[in-house]
Image (cartoon, rainbow, N blue to C red; front, side, top):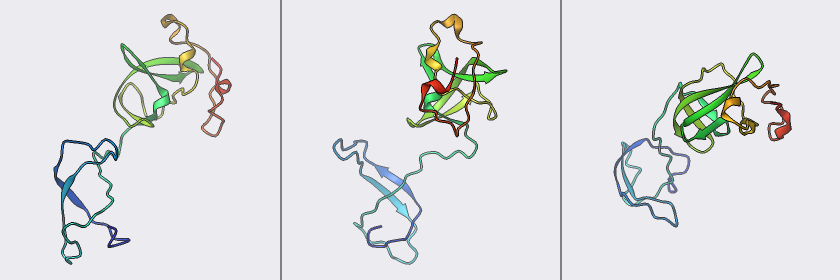
Length: 146
């Protein structure tokens, strides 16, 4: 709240317009807030963070790990130093991370760079790979060998 710096208030959205203002990317919303000390006044403006859904145990991968095809979503994992194409099911995707609902275990590594180098569907698995850790320069496509 601009008028109450450093203060946080938890609330619940009770009503909102179904129309997004395109230039500002804003939407009018009304909330119910607990106000036991009567610090909040009608018409005050605030910058808010809205939590849509929170999952403590979500399995997230970088969106660069996803291979999106007409047949669905796939990921390339590493098994016995070979690339393996696995189909996966995802729901949440914010453009940075994607939640994987099935097709991947939390201890599996995924291939981020080089996944589009397989020329045909018949070569979708089995290529030799040399994995680089997250400390390596993953921006360089030559860091992974297929």
